[in-house]
Image (cartoon, rainbow, N blue to C red; front, side, top):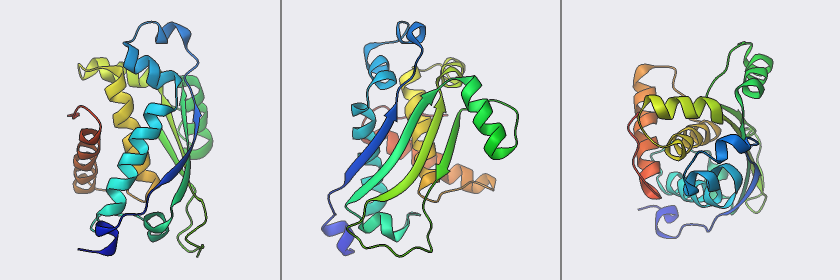
Length: 187
């Protein structure tokens, strides 16, 4: 067992959370989902647990600075289809809505002191698209949001899915992450 597995570094996660601004939507969901749409604390708990899980497993893709740093920072924005379409067009030249976008900030060529707060980047999720997908998959919006945020997080940590096999591996690990603090999700 590696030193990381036997003596994990406690993680201090600085989360810049931008809640959903759709009052009509928040009135239509259960209390847990409403809390996820409007408060950082459930995301703080999930993201911290998910990052710690990835950091502890040396077989998983994760930049070394992320494994070693006690302080990480990332942004999470819950938005609408119009905003995510605009971002998708600006950054990916795709004039369409999408469910989640990730904007990694890590530069693996940088060598930083291990006591530096490491910025992972930003995750942006369209709540409207998530709501449609939740309905399509017959589960709660809160579960779909967790699924999408876990996907975005893995991208911030360097995961990608250019092949069917890499996508299958990534989706399988997302299910493991979701089981840490809640229901397992089968997409």
